[in-house]
Image (cartoon, rainbow, N blue to C red):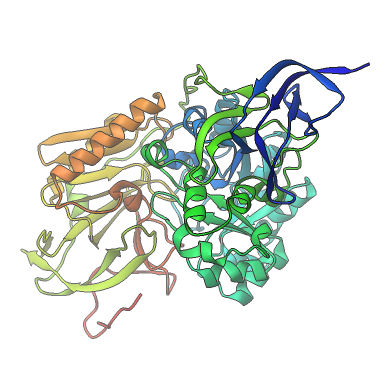
Length: 567
């Protein structure tokens, strides 16, 4: 008896990821899975779809992403990603976990269940990022282990504490071992590590990495036995500088990720499809690139039911008009064409609130006029910073912002447990002329961070996001110009993605009103200036932190200690 299946797609040229070649064939689909890719399969179909003249590739997989960086919930980001051919993402819920702990992770899992997009979660390995962080929660190995009960959980996310791995920290190793015990694996985060240090990470169980910005760094990870995720986010734009590492011989070790990308950029630029276009434009064969965007990512994450168009695989398909420019015609997820957005709204979340009692007196920064100060130097489109030592202005023993030299005051305010901790420092590179920006998105502890040309403007911006229980705002001393409310943990909008994207565009327009104009995203850049595990100097709610000495330092450079800083 001939079996009847749901659908057969005919006429298209279909990518075989095992040979990296297109071939004209048929795709037989039943109950969300591919049954056969034989043109003469002994099957009949209830529906026949003729896609003559089209090309079909497997659904794209984003191998490492922080949903929270889009500032919308998983169910909302999915509506954008599916349009761009992304059918699976592997997410690290590190950000909301640092605010709300296990409740934050479980919220993201539940909200994602509203969407056809498959959201796989890697449990966050560093909550808090460093032991001294004043974040909202602590998650040990014993806290994380029960979460493997969720089918969405797929392993351990980016292990970034090389020191803990190298010295054999018991809790860190237990987190890694638990991932493998449950049949999964552990991602690495080897920013700045040497080839020998990468081997240490690989030996401890980290088999992927996305922290490379040069060809040499990418190849070092391949040589260490890792899969490498070439990244193109909003700030970390690395594909152009790393794609030359890929050859036909080693391409099997490479996939793509976006890591941190705003909802506005996802809508305008795309997701993994942008990585694909860039790689093809750089000269890689389209067949190889589409394999990297699907099969290789699935293999890296041990997702054996997807990544290829072959028997018993999920029917996750992207139909292209032209494979050379990634022109997407239709997207199928689990056998269903995604021609309309899912009808859903973000789930409510009320587990956290902003707690602080900031006063203008907390923003004081004693300084001597003409004295040298340690200043955070923004590197456009990078999360690393320069360690600058610059002469600053002061009046009556207090620092005075210098808009001509672009040396401004920056503050970080603890907002989880009302500790009253306020870090005050200096930053160069934001180009503000008359106003301030404040945000409750500040990696990884996610305290309040602000920068401005006056204390009054800083206070106005912080007051605005406090009133909405989190968000991002641009203000002058007497007026809030624009705000993006983020009431879900101070990180995510509770609105549809289109609303959040419009508010984000209004924020940028307001920023341009009060600044000289900059070529990078000021909000996501500001959010990384509080992360002490990334070089070179950062500001926390406890003060200025020097990554190179891994210690807190004063803003004022002690007499006789001035030096030429080259970081």
